[in-house]
Length: 440
Image 1 (tube, helix red, strand yellow):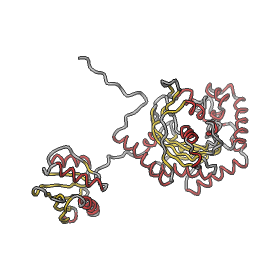
Image 2: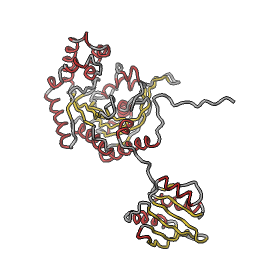
Image 3: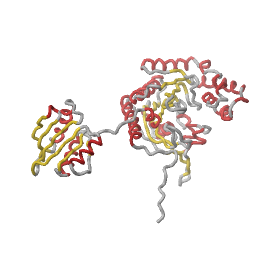
Image 4: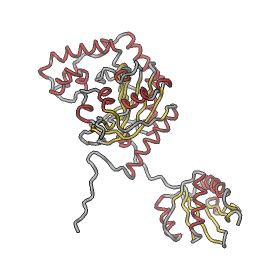
């Protein structure tokens, strides 16, 4: 019989397990915790959209739209795209679902996103992002709150060391138009020395030349005019309000006047949290104000600001997470599975985590519990039909821990069983009592 060939994982995807998955989960747990502190609402949006949602919002000429999107025609002949990011889909939902009535909206979401690009360290074709947006607020305070949210998330994850917030202003429409004109004039003078990619950008998106990595472009980009010479007084005041707000919130930042966003709907604040711990792919979280995006999708002028971060990249920066050890493991001396199952259910109802063992015999169960790292052992023994003994022992041998756990344990069991005790022994490290089912 021919050997059956097992299908392989698709290149650029990942199977997340063990310590890697625990780091991944830690990022999402911290994001949810900080989300609650800032009172942002959780939303979920479709994983695929009409292709025009992304073509209009991200821009037809960008690499994401022209090279990286997973686009296909469905059976009805419609052009569908797997989401390469979240903001465009959120903006579409804001318009089509009538969320304007709730503005200003503070929203978060997370999940898988898809880009067909060369896989490398921390970058996959199916990867995961967390995303935070404020829609309908034109005030600098919205930018400050989002940046404080991001900063607190990094603190929660313990990865602020070596991570720097780089901040820039893109000004208002008048500022941006004047700066663009100056940039085009500068780069035209050096057209013969620019890379092929930058020549393409010069015609379509000249600001993107500023962040070119090509050695041919760097001296020319470094000598390009700064935006500050073209800032209107209103744009300057906006940026000053953002920086003062960050200072008041205790969020450290540094100015990067070369930090840009090429699309025309970006305004005012642009930012990235960057690190040198991930090689060339140094951005771990980035975003900006996109006051013109919703207009691109057919809506009214709507101010908005947001950021996104790669879960995989954040997970790479945090320490390895050990497996979560259960609070209690039950070690029984042939008291019967019905006893064990009933006690486990009672303890879980009060929030104690348990390790269920499928092995039989006290020695095998004890070894299984030690391997799992259980902090407490609940030994059960048969006294007579309808009555057992139980003995709680702390692995940590911490006198402060046993009473706390035992209090929850006996409180939980008291709802379903009759208890006698507890009786303290072994200098407080062990508690024991007898147990019988109520009504028997």
